[in-house]
Amino acid sequence: MNKKLAAAIQRDNELEDAGMHADDRKTCWTHESWAEDCESDPAHINPSALHYPRPA
Ligand SMILES: [Zn+2]
View 1 (cartoon, rainbow, N blue to C red):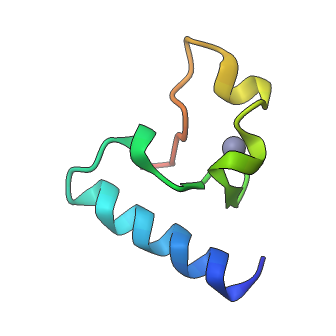
View 2 (cartoon, protein in one colour; view 1 turned 180 degrees about the vertical axis):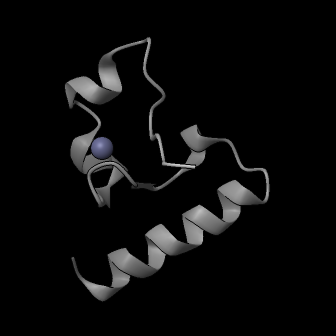
């Protein structure tokens, strides 16, 4: 993982903790990647799953 991505994930985590909806993340916690790079992953297509679940 490059530093820019790591920083973006950290920022998204903080924004989400502050109330941002998970769908508005630019990064994916599950895959540790940019959201656009894994948006076709079955984990994100399955409607029963949260888009970018994070452990509590
Ligand atoms: Zn993902």
